[in-house]
Image (cartoon, rainbow, N blue to C red; front, side):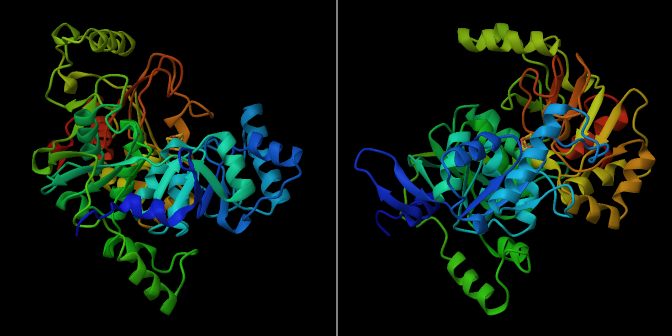
Amino acid sequence: MKNGKTLAEKIWNNHVVFQEKLGPAILYIDGHILHEVTTPQAFAALREKRLKVRRPDKTIATCDHNVPTDNQTLIKDPLSKLQVETLVRNCRDFGITLYGLDSPYQGIVHVMAPELGFIQPGMTIVCGDSHTSTHGAFGALAFGIGTTEVEQVLATQCILAKPMKSMEVNVEGIISKGVTAKDVMLAVLAKIGISGGTGFFIEYTGSLIRNLNIEQRMTICNMSTEGGARAGLIAPDKITFDYLRNRKFVPNGKKFEEKVKEWKKLKTDKGAKYSKSVNLDGNKIEPLVTWGTDPASGIKMNEMVPDPKNERDESRRKAKKRALNYMQIKPGRKMESLPIDYILIGSCTNGRLSDLRDAAQIIKGRKVNSKVTAWVVPGSRRVKMLAEKEGLDRIFKEAGFEWRWSGCSACIAMNNDKIPYGKYCLSTSNRNYEGRQGPGVRTFLASPLTAAASAIEGRITDPRIYL
Ligand code: SF4
């Protein structure tokens, strides 16, 4: 087929309401997810302008960033409490369904919305949060928006947006033992850097990607934004359809089968051209961990912390020096010799059931190192409930982990779950910037398998020794 379209282009074109010749498009939005942090100003503006929410039926909300995970009902921080209470009031006043602290579906926006079946192939999805890219795992065009745009979507169910070019990240091969979707994405980021995806919607293709389950696909798409991309997406297939069957927002019976017929058409045409393509050999990907203060600094456990002196480019040399200074680690040290103080297994990247199962298989019958404080924070109440049903909570608790309630937790220093100043935390989340987990906190990003092995050893550890 000549001049075919990419998947992202097809979804985009299906949603353009109006296109100015030189300006942005007015894009229709199928689903809008809200949380307590990026919405108060938007609702205040609606009140001021006496506007209603255009499609409350296409909008859902939850609270996650400000929710404590030791005791969800006791929000000690006054600002966090106010944010959560404001969301409750706004949802009540504007007729929006809130899956809040009294709902079995409460959880991190990017964990709970897919559980409800709110995200479906071919949809446009937005949320005032950059990790909205997660939802591209369903073959949706999903991206984060700012507060003003949240107001726009609430008022009109549309957004002014510029089209992005399509980029392909192709990963062929078979995932090796001890390697997870998180490692695959750290490898992608190490290859493209933190701005390699800027200006693009990334489509992930290749045999390795196709063989991932939907939760692993969410891990991949979640971190697209760490490579600068507006969105990441994967063509929907049987794995996607099987996950969606019987979920709350998904039609049943005959209507579901009709939907599947439509969804099957959602793929990049054979003759379509991506503006940029990157290839990775999936057979060669190993467990990775970041050494620096950006998510593209992943290296193997047996590799040495790089020396900035070997960096020819001056600005990159300076950035590496600064990162090492913040991390307080010396060049030439083997990654697996570095000690850790805290472990966080959770977040919208790796807080799903399969992530907890991964970690539990290593933790079972073992003990957390006495120098380490280790937390498991399920991504949603549903993940927590399902994990408890199969006894994962007992495995973690017996090993010395704290088994907590669902929320963003120490992925972001916005709630009670703070890592103390200067401590090293190996985290399954997605960002390791300076201060992300609290002032002076030094973050290593890795997979749930690596987190589990490192919790036992008290230092960065290759999980393959336990598998
Ligand atoms: S878990 Fe972290 S990255 Fe994900 S939505 Fe919450 S704060 Fe953002």
